[in-house]
Length: 116
Image (cartoon, rainbow, N blue to C red):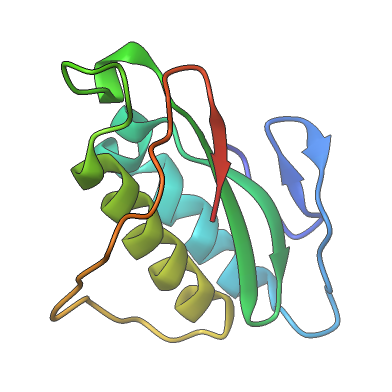
């Protein structure tokens, strides 16, 4: 993915409040995704970046599904964890998750596009 000071990801314009996010922070976000093999494995895409808010998307592909053709809970939690970390990066904070738990209320079938 390409994320730069102009707010371009994969050739598409994003919603970016450039007055609040420095080019250095945007570059760091870019490197966070481009150089992270796990986010690439999940197929995460940056949809929008604002100060304190990052929106990611993930297409539920077969490789992310369990036997029942629904998204594996680990993939869903990984997306949530990554969205939280990216949001912290948007305000120039580097964090790691110490603990994360979730209660699932609905399955995400193969082919669904998810947003976090």
